Image (cartoon, rainbow, N blue to C red):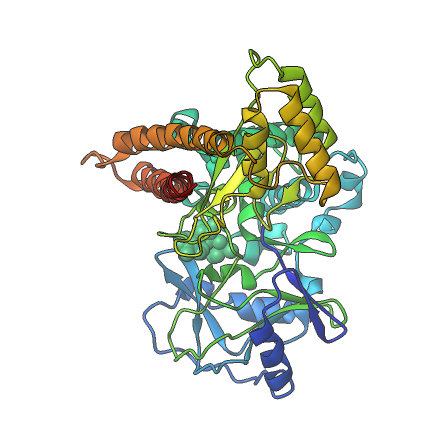
Length: 465
Ligand SMILES: C[S@@+](CC[C@H](N)C(=O)[O-])C[C@H]1O[C@@H](n2cnc3c(N)ncnc32)[C@H](O)[C@@H]1O
């Protein structure tokens, strides 16, 4: 799902607020002027099948949406290109809320059949299926017919069990299964609507529902209406280095995008979907970025059942459990599962290996009730968090970090084993199979890089103690 930054009463607020864009907004917004003349770009990328799309959307909106962009084709599917020279700070597009699709666009006779357990994504998926079924009678037909086909989507929710086996060492494997289970639950919950309105939803299968669900997760933005499909804006592809987001102006009731750089006529215009790891990009959007600096890996630690202090340690974790920390846009670091990021060399502080993971390992390594009691006293006397300081006994501190090292080494081994199964690509493989195999390679290679950096840091830490 795409995060949408919100503009509140002409001041910006967002989790991902960028100071540079904040100042740009004030410098350039006043001078932004959406001219009415649409120049035709001199480029071979233009998608002639979409020539009528923007005029249709502008007519529906009763307002100009963009004079700066035109729809074209790229290796990422549909794309938006500069239809004239664009300057940093220019407004690229403005899409009124009135032409965005959200769950409240569903006919009320269908909505009233849906229980509270049906979420916004499932409702918008239902809306897409409904409009598809209406065919030419749909008022959204020019948009619905331009959405990618099932064979163009590669989110892991659409992977077969055999394909998912390729990514088994990654936390994305479990996350995808969880998401698939949720989709199955949603499918059962909306089936009542299918049964009551067979004309609206002719024999919709779980595969079709999952496809519609994938369309929503890969091209809808969080919005005040739950989630919204934003026609035209959703033809923008992702570039991790871009500083342009889709912004939402609640006062003016439109979404907009401001250029973060200059573009020459014919350049592809890209925005950022957010600071996502390859796991999140694969789950929600079905693509990866090579050498993704937001990659991360998941490490799970457990108290062994044969530990003489098993019960005491579990009680302690329970007592000192801090609220789970949600990494922005990513899977959660909670309980005994920890998200690690690439440890940058040189700062010597181990940034990337969460303190909570090191604390967990310290508690795991304690051999006596006395040692546990000491950690409790220390926590109470300090900031209340357990085992955040190096253990007094150097050998135990080393043992705690070697325990982590051993867990991470196992993960490295497992990742290596799976990568070896994936590389090289068999010569007969092509199309969807080859693409998904490459995604799996990118994912595991990125996680391996993160794990290796953590391993190097831990080895260094132990050797310097
Ligand atoms: C919001 S849509 C963008 C428009 C889309 N290309 C289309 O054909 O409609 C997001 C989808 O575009 C594709 N995409 C966007 N950025 C990409 C990138 N950097 N690399 C590969 N695919 C990308 C992915 O298929 C993704 O799910």
